[in-house]
Amino acid sequence: MKKRTSSFTVIGLLFVGIGLTLVNDNMYLKYGFLILGTAFLLYSISTMIKNK
Image (cartoon, rainbow, N blue to C red; front, side):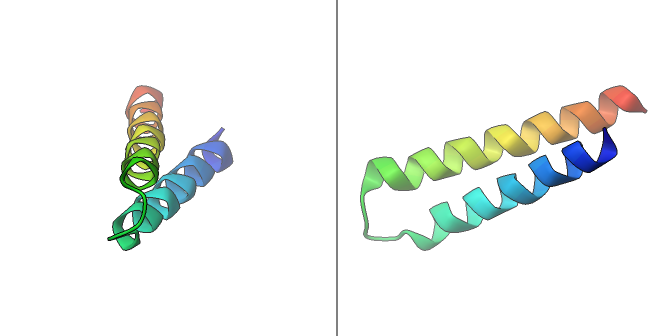
């Protein structure tokens, strides 16, 4: 379970990074990546808190 949580964290950070680098590109694509990345990060953080 720990490996799955860390992979969700890495994927979330990757999506947030991609969303932040898309400055003048498609607005929906940028905010889609940001929302998806924060969803992955919130899921991994809640899973870490729940397991402790």
